[in-house]
Amino acid sequence: MSPRPSNPLTREALLDAARLEFARSGLDHARVEDIARRAGVSKGAFYLHFDSKEDAFREILQRFLGVLEEQTTRRREAELAFEREVGRPGIGATLEQLMQHDCRLDTELLEVLWRNRVILAALDRATGQPYLQMVADFRRRMRQLVAGHIALNQGEGWLRGDVDPEVVGDVIVGAFESYGRRMVDLRAKPDLGAWSRAFLTLLYQGLFSPAAQRPPTGPPGASD
Image 1: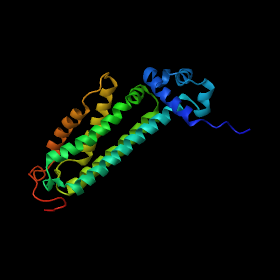
Image 2: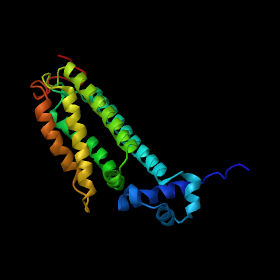
Image 3: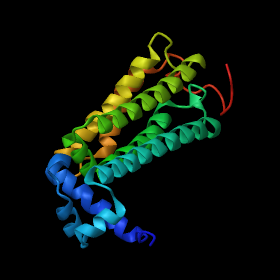
Image 4: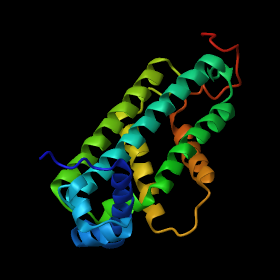
């Protein structure tokens, strides 16, 4: 007899329940029976979908990191669209225009972190090399992505060339990690837009070249 197929709706209910249990008890102390009870199914139903609680946590973490990576990719696409349609700082666009645009994008990313703060809480309490390695691999990919964007913009002359792109990547990725940890301990939602603007203000004051901080001198797409 072939195995009974799993129900996608039940699987999602179990994952939702597991997120809450992992956040409440940590991975080590969360119990499968509590996850199943919270999802309104039997313990046996849990094992139709997952081999173990660790298996469920792995899927939760993979999904979460995937969402963050997709959001980061969309942010870069939006940056390129802004450059095409409005221009770069000092060439078609003001620094304040870019600030408002990037602040909105970063706030969207912070919204993703806020909506998933129970996962952040669970991850904060998780132990075990597989999960740490998943996060480390994700962190490395994000640092490389950011550093590549910084190096490209330095080559185009609107970011300072005397700053190591790898260091900037560490700073940006580390800032969002720190924001996520702060969210775990908050009951009320903070002003995420203010968080974004404060960070971008510090970042841009240190990164932008003098040419980028001058008033715009030409239309979008103009070159020096």
